[in-house]
Image (cartoon, rainbow, N blue to C red; front, side):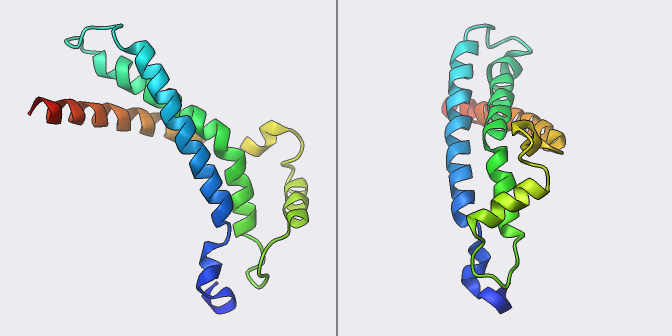
Length: 143
């Protein structure tokens, strides 16, 4: 890539990645805080399942929803980044042709093809992240 495009070539697909992450972050935190607000007060803080119910489940839902919303953007980003490195940019028509050739235009579900492991990873990872984050925040606040 450096040989053909120089350092700017390393940023191929930057804008689609930026948009994917911008949307993902918004969905992620919006869903988390809505679900957390709904779940707070369902159990007492002394309950063994308090962290799981109050932080873990909302975190998993948020991670899953952000993945569902942004995965089609990730599919397009991958196609853009996998384009011919000798070309300066990949044209919109080439992206649509590639999506069509690979079968991604057969319906919205086709853009999620092969994504189940990634989806499950997002759910588990985000759930774990928010449990750890909220527990650390509580411990720091109590100090």
